[in-house]
Image (cartoon, rainbow, N blue to C red; front, top):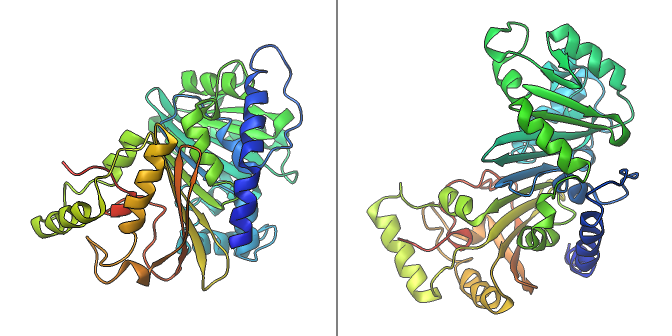
Length: 360
C-alpha cells in the first residue's frame, strides 16, 4: 500500500493539469471521450458550489468483493449486503436499492462504473456512469413505464402522487436527464438543478474541481474505492462535539491543549481503499490556506491520531494505525491501516478528534 500512495502523490500534479485543461474548455467545445480517472470524471461532473460530494467506484468495489459483473440476482444481493458491511457504499445514495432499481429502472449500482453524489444550496444530484451492458433506450423505456414525463429531455416524476416507485428513490431520482455520449445518468432532486448540472458536464459552467482548494484535497485521495469531500463548514458540523458529554469535551480539550489548536480546513476529505478482507486503508486529507498552515496542522493532527479514542472506548490504534503523514501543497494527509471489523468512518459522523475542527 505504501507504493500505491507514493504513486498517487507523483501523479497528483498531472491530475491538476488535467483539470486545468478541462477548465479551459468550458465554453463551446464538444466533450471528447473521457479517459481520465473515475474519481476525476465523477467530481468534475459536480457544480463548483457543491458543498458535500461523495464518490463510489463501483467497478473497483465489485472487484474488491469478488463479484464480477454482479448481473445475477444473488450477486446483486451480495453486492448490496457486502458493500454496506465493508462501509464501501456509505457515500452512495442508491447502493441500498440495488435489486429494486434493477427491476424498476432497468439498471442499478451493479451496472455502474462509478457514482457521484453532490449537495449544494440549490439542490442535490446523483451522477452515474453506466457500463456498456445497459442501453439508453431501455433506460428511457423504464422511465416511461414508471410514470416519468419527458419534457425536452428532462424526465420528472411526482414523488408524492406515484405508487409505483419507492418514495425515497422517487425523491432522489426526481428529475432524470441522460447523456448517452458519456454514458451518464444525471438524477437531481429538482428539474432546474438537473439543468445546472448538465451545464457543468458540458463545460458551460465550472465544476467542483475548478475550485483549487477542493482539487488539492481530491488529488490526495485519488484511486480510492469510496470518497467523501466536504467544505470546511460541513466538516465542522459533522465532526462536532456539541452532543458529547462534559467528560468527553474535557478529554478533547486536554488533548488539544497538549497537541496544539485545530484550524478549520478549507475542504476536508476521507477515502477508503478496500484492500483485503483483514486490512483496509483509510486516508484523511485537510486543505488549508497555505502550505505552512498545512505543515503545522499535520503535526497537530498526527499527535491526535493515537492514544485514547476520545468519544469512544478503547484506543485509536485498535481501529486505525498511522502509516504515513505528509504535506501535499496546501493539504495535510494522514494514511492509516484500518481493521474492517472495527469502527466505520465513511459516514463522517461522531467525534474523531484528528479529523475535527476547533473546539468552541
